[in-house]
Length: 239
Image 1 (spheres, rainbow, N blue to C red):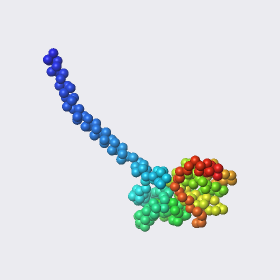
Image 2: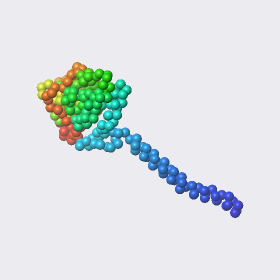
Image 3: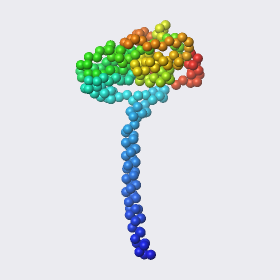
Image 4: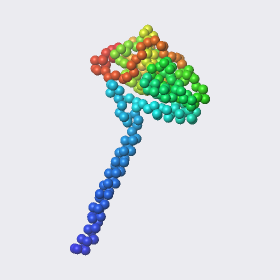
């Protein structure tokens, strides 16, 4: 009996001594994995930034845009940003407008006067001018006979799957219609789906010719998605 006892006892004793070491190693590995996961969260969600209506917004970074702009210029390539709000566009322009090593062109349906703008960056020696950049990277959609007083344009565009990163200024000109600056990649989507989304009769949606601009006159629309209560939603559906 004593022989069997002495031969089996060391096994559990070694295991008990190793347990704290193994537990520590597992805990360290778990914490490391968690930290790595936290760092790898995409930029859009890392800060959880939201606008005043509670909707997530793009985590804006001038440094990131500058890095991509300079990389494009060095590679003799072109980098185009999403549409940015007035404040963010001003920060980008202040940082990159007067640099000799990168071409910085602001487009958005009304050129440098656009409220919401996107930027086209390239090597200055490529010789891209403002008119060419505007025609290539911004399209203007005209919507006639639309009654959207109770249904804001950002909400309408979001419902047809158009991200606001792809939308510039929306200007309503009395007697003419609503002019919408968009990325060319979503222009056909707007023409196809807006007539189905906007309530009313006689709604006409067309894509203006390349290089067309938004008129200077008109009422510039607020481009924040808004939460509507049920009464407002019903009113929007009747329009």
